[in-house]
Picture (tube, rainbow, N blue to C red):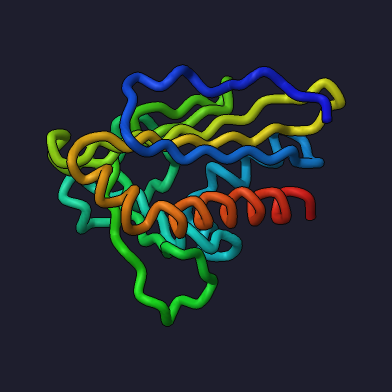
Amino acid sequence: MPEASTNLPPPSYSGPLTCYVSREISATIERVWGVLSDFPRYPEWNPFVRSQEITDKSGKTVLEDQTPAKGKYLNMKVHIPPTMDDSVQAQTAFELIIHYDDASHRLAWKNLLPSWFIRAERWQALSITEDGKTLYESREVFAGIGAYLIKWFISKNLIKSFEAMADALKSTSEQ
């Protein structure tokens, strides 16, 4: 399989758990980026991140403008393990977008819990393979005391959730 070089930046720290996934997608990079960056439409296709809304700093008021940008806040509902069944209780995550770049096709957010407890930073990036397909990559590094709890208790289901999102992004983008 022809590989593109990674478009992910090197991790800025290390921790006891890193989740990584990649998929080669038979669609243009613009098509895949359009699906990945359209947060309001996640419930239509994404079994991991069931909702992802840009909010004010309190996390309580959903902003009218849902265009991702550095410095905006995300209130997310996630399913671990992944499911499209919204009757299953979802966990909530409140995140800060730390990178968003249409030109480089990269976005990232970090959690807002105290860093001594858990530090988590998720990057997603697209690049073009030698044969013109799109390579999707996602990596989240977990550090701090809480990272060990995630590793011991939910890492297998968390990795399944990353895999399910990558598969769903591929399927949706290739339609």
